[in-house]
Length: 302
Ligand code: ATP
Ligand code: MG
Image (tube, rainbow, N blue to C red; front, side, top):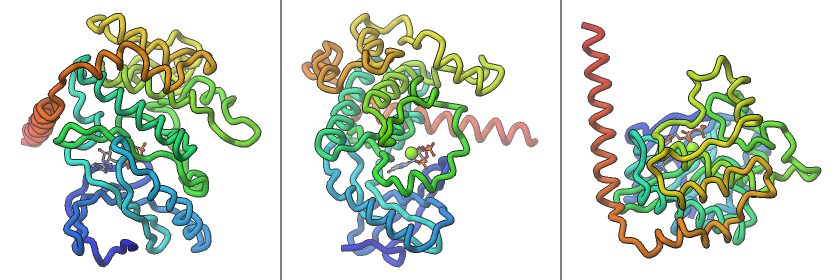
């Protein structure tokens, strides 16, 4: 069945990205809580219909590591995209001052399985791997969202904010990785996975903007500098895993099959990690940070 706006009751805003707003909604006929992403595009109906058709492939993206897709529709040049609501939100807002190694391993394992599923089962390369696109719920599940399935949608997004926080691999920044067919290689996603892991471990983006005079200097550091590493207190095994992702030369990066066999993930699969408990504490810490920010803002005004 197809979802439409009349069936939805709008709740609070969950976040804003470069291209649109995500709101929590209730699908009234089924009582299912969903996340609805609104993307504004100045396109004619034919193009919008094309996007909806391309998005249809998402109905086949059913896996424990992929955020479920419920459907999409458009109203007046806005595409509305409905997906599974993840009640702990994205990892960037849960990471605090950095995620402990055992939790990082569990999150990474889900990410690698999710990326491998997309590639093997649907021939999809994610193209936007980063902590804001890794979502968690209170059951401790980790799922990926916002992967590139629609060429038309991709083309129609005004790519204004390149830079700032780039998770792009060096070869993509240099503009090499698009071959004649215009396809990205899967190894660019492996770089973004490694960079996301470091961000989760540090609690902030690994090339902090305040260190660089401008975006150009920051991108130059990604292309010409040594790849970043996990913080000191992480194990040699975890550091090796990240190094296997962050090779400057794309061909040298590990494949998903190799990553799944790496001791970092093999050890994870035999270890007990209480993910729901970690999510619980991370959500609480996030709420406290928000409360402190509101308090600080109020203090500044009075
Ligand atoms: P960008 O625009 O660069 O992709 P982004 O991923 O942060 O950045 P959006 O995809 O628009 O932007 O998402 C905005 C925020 O909404 C996310 O950071 C996340 O915290 C929240 N969010 C997105 N999807 C869901 C979901 N299914 N469940 C819960 N929260 C979500
Ligand atoms: Mg996103």
